Each structure stands twice: as C-alpha cells, then as structure tokens.
Image 1: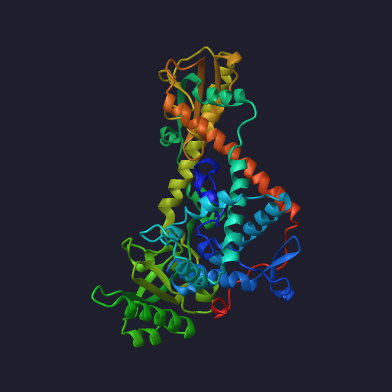
Image 2: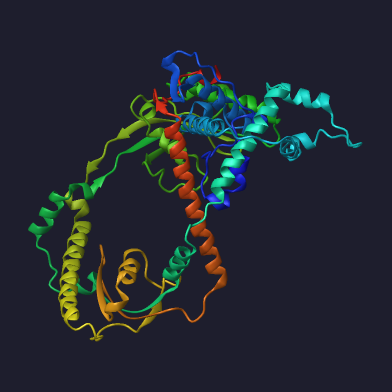
Length: 489
C-alpha cells in the first residue's frame, strides 16, 4: 500500500514494510471486524483489534502473491511481518482520519492513471474498458466504491509521508559543521606495541600454568554440539511440466509435514533417495559446496529448532533455490563436550603465551605513554606523519579514529593510547590540524544528502511514535507459531 514510501526510500532510508510487498491486491483496504473473540485479538489500535484471522488471511494471500511455498504463510517471522504491516496501516489510517486530510478529484484521477493495471484497460481508440475494470475489481474482492476509497487513502498517506520527507535540519550551519568534522585533517604518527614482538621475551609458561588455564577456561576448549541428519531433495526436471512439478512440490510439503516422524513416506511417494550428512553444526555442514542443501541457513536453523532437535520431527520444507525443495530430520544429537587436555595442549599453550605477551606489550606501552605525556613533543620511535580525516581515514578505524579525532586542537601536540585486544596497544601522536587543501564536491554533496536523510529518518520515527501513542496501540496477545492448517482457514 505504501507506494509513496517506496518512492522516497532514498530520502527516508528505512523500510516501512520489512521484506514484504503490499498485502492487498490493487492497494485495497481490508475491512475489519470489531466483534471477534478477544482471544484472537493481537493488537488494538484506537480500540479496534487486529485479529489472528486477519493476519492468517493476509499471510496466505501474500504467500500466494509472491509465488512462494504455501507453508511460508505459517512461518512465524513471515506472519510477524504481516502483523507489523497491518499495524502500520492502522496507525497511519488513524493519523489520516484524525488530521481530516482531503484529496481533490483531479489528484485522484491522476493517481489512478499511474497504475499499470488501470492504464492497460484503455482500448486503442482511447476509451476506457469499464466492463474489464469491474471484472478486475471483482476478482480482487472489491467494488468501485472500495477501490476509489483505497486510492484516496493512499494519496492521504502520501501527503503525510511527503511532509516528513521534506524534513531538513533547522539550522543550515549545523549541517556545515558536521561536514567540516568529516573533512578536517590531523597529522598523526603511530607507535605500536604488538604482542607478537614479546612472544620470545620472558614468555615460557610452566605445565602447571597451562593446566590451570585449561581448567579455568574449559569453555574455550569445548566442541560444540553437532548432529547427524538425513534429508530428501525434490528438484524440478527441466523437461517436466511446471504444473506437474508444482503438484509434486505440494505433495512434498504436505507429506513431510503431515507425517513428520519420518522422511520415508515422502521419499517413497515421490521416488526420492534419503541422503545422510554427519557432523552438522549450527554453522552448517563441514566441507560442502555453497549450493548443498545443508549449506542453506534456513535448513540448518530448522534442524536446530525444538521440533526437529528435541522431538525428532521433519523440518518444514525449505526452498533453497528455484525448483529445489528440501526437508530434513535429526538422526543423532551429539551434545557439546570439553575436549581432553592432551587433544588441545598446543592450543592451550598458544593462548597462554599470547596473553602473556600481550600483557608485556600493554605494560611497555603504558610506561612509554607516561613518559610522552610529560614530554609530548618527543617523537622518537614514532613512524612518519600522515594526514588523516574521517573522509580519508587511512588505516585508522573505529575507536582509534574516535580517540584521535576527539583530542582538542588547542592542546597539540598530544598523545592517546588505544588498546587492540588480542594484539597489543598503539600510541598515536597528533601534531597539527588543518582544513583539506582540496574538497571533493561529490563526496560533500553525498554526505550532505545523508545528513538530511538521517534527519528525515529521525523525524519519521518520532512521527510514528507520536501517532502510535495517540492511537492508543495496545498489545493484547503475542503472535504465536501457526497451528497446522491455520493459514489456510
């Protein structure tokens, strides 16, 4: 429904509808019942409920529209996205009504002529095919009054979104100041204290130290749980009629779901071989190709879900590629276990020596920093100077950049120390500050647009929060995993 939001996504930098496309064909507005059993109420907006039945019906329609597996309509993340979409429609609808926004007749006509399905109804002689128009509406469960109302509603939403999209920083100087912060350059020198340089200096842990570290950090030497699985794959035959394969895919999904204690019924019915894979971790199966069924994150996630892992049920059918459907089940669960010391002795020694060397590097850096703070003009030991900025960071990232750029320009030269966990410590010496001799106009314009986009995004977030509060949004019941057949009701 939110064409206007999609038109302004470069400005707003957010997605109102998560990963789904409009929930209603031809941007229609669903009629809502206010008299459903309260046990089916999920959320109320201005006292009117969004019900479980609405979510399930919208999820089913959406799954059919995108041509996905029908079982996706039962997926909790998919249904949650549908609920979020319905909620935002209700909130925006409340705002439109509360503000009493109006749409002119000509504006509505212009909007209708922009819809491809409507443009296609004009004959070659330029006349509008009213009969086909009514048929199109009827096929989508709408009449003309509902359709015109839905388009009017869309335009009112567009008015709201456009008003937010025009948000700009109230003070132009603020934008310029932010740009200046990104462009200002500082002359920086570095002095590194790396743990690797201290590995051969006074680092020789005793057997007792190694054993003590192993016992105190057993989790570091634990082999994570893994499973042995079996699975079946249904692949489309290029020579096969698409309708026939679609029927097979439905059978595949239905049998693996209805007879979830075994993959054999589906394998026998569709003449598929049951394949096996050992040592599958939560990260996937080791050593398999990227297109392997068990390299798919959704398949692996399903295998580690409660139904598959604890109850030994077949996973839901997952489409891993066009024309490829997979269902799997857990055969054996191997719990996590701490590996014996003898098997990890080399790794224990590596970690102990690395940590000891890192402590030596940090101590040396602290001593040097204390001396430099007393004499910051001393540049002995530092590398050559480099001019850096947030636009041209060089090798500086994250905390290092923040620390260097936070030093007051009135207190130069200055030194700062930044810890690099697992590596050591780096000391930075900042000597001068300057504006860049040349400014990249393209970079400046792009950053100015980003700043304005962030302002618009912040404004829209506040806008939605205000109307959510004004509409008295109240969560009644949490959305739960769909039961068998609920999405099709």
